[in-house]
Amino acid sequence: MAKFPIRYFRSLRMVCLLVVFLSAVPAPRSQGLGEPQREQLLNGLNVLLWPAPGSSSVLIKLRIHSGSAFDLAGRSGEMSLLGDILFPDAATVDYFTEEMGGKLEVRVNYDSTTITMQGKASEFDKIVEVLRNGVLSTQLTPEVVDRVRQARIKILRETAVSPPVVADRAIAVRLFGDFPYGKPSEGSAEDVARIDRADLMLARDRFLNSNNATLGIVGGINPSHAMRILRQLLGPWRKSDQLVPTTFRQPQPPDPRVLIINSPSQTAEVRLAVRGLSRSDTDAVAADVLAKVAYRRWMESLPVLSRKPAFVRNDTHVLPGMFIFGAGVEETNVLDVITTARKVFESLIGIPPSAAELERAKNEVIAERSTGTKPEGAVDGWLDQETYKLKSVPDAMTVMQVSAADVQRAATRLFKEAKTASIITGDPVHLRAVLENRIPYEILGAIDTSSAPSKIPAKPAGTPNPR
Image (cartoon, rainbow, N blue to C red; front, side, top):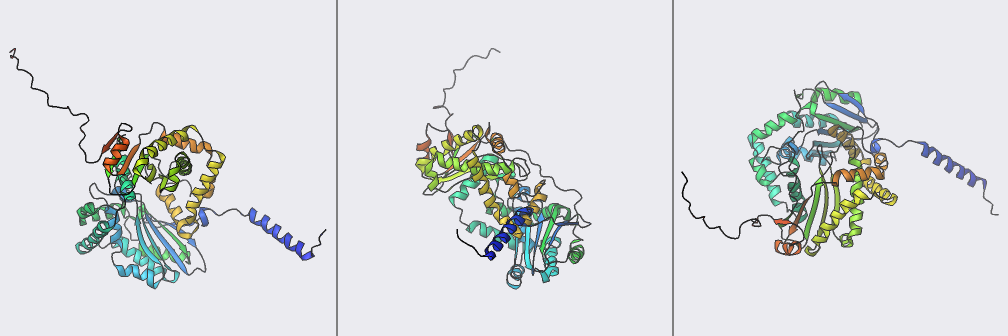
């Protein structure tokens, strides 16, 4: 029997004790950040603080709980344009990137507007002052509005819209129609050109209010000093008398026919979608896992997809969003893509995921959310809780608790008796030949003559008027 020195057993004992100790330490909440210190200014601004003594940097995120879903009809991109105007001078952005080694950016989606400011902790007061100037003294002069609007229009016109993007936008319109989620959050060049100064002033007064916002701060700050500066600089921020509720008229059921859209491309982009769940729905996380299970079953049903850009995605918002299947394939494969996707719908309702399917899907969801372990992503999680009125901040534990029954229940809610929207982009002539007499379809811009009479009926013979 081999002999080992005493120090070997001592080292082994220390390793075992370390393993036992680490296994007893509970995992931190909220993907890397613990419970924040919660404060509120007199004007209703909610503040979340995560002091990090000794850190030389600070991250500030201001979340406005209103986004592009509130864009006026025919003026998509209104909230995005307002976001551009908050900090219209390039010198301000350069100050954060070059002088402080940080960043300043504004992101607008359907549900919210988020300002991210990162810089040196020693410049905290200066950073909050810049934030104050943006939200309290927004530069809505005619000159600034015109300059920033023209810049956004230029970007929208010059940005190459790829066939996948065209397909994504088309399926949203097909599913939602005039509902807010049917229009691009960033807007279109035509719609942005219609936005005037009065529209932006109205949007600012309706949504940029202290009691419609949450401020998250993490880094090398002293909480008492930070609150004093916030009261001084953001305390005068106007409070709204009444918050605008997220209520819109529900969209009509989508046309069941496949919509063919002419698009010059070597491949055809296929999209199928059903109305989804809201972010606050109890089955929203299960639907995220469902998307991963659906993707794997789709790949197994049609192996050609494994070599193509394909996806299954669960898009959630404040209101019910969209559960979507998408792929870019040869035009000869579009019929198989659509029919197998519909069969996957049925299989997800009737057959719960196996233990292996469920484990793999949950791990993939957790991996996608791994960016939340960084401070910025973790703060986003807490701000999302405020925006979407979530009971808790979603984390890996939330995903791991999803069961096979949860996934099957989500599938039943999504797919059973659901109205499916379907679109294909490509060559209408080729696609028509593939779908003819197999699946009902229509071609965008074509006149539907399927129900028109073959010839004009003859005028009936005159009869004497009985009167």
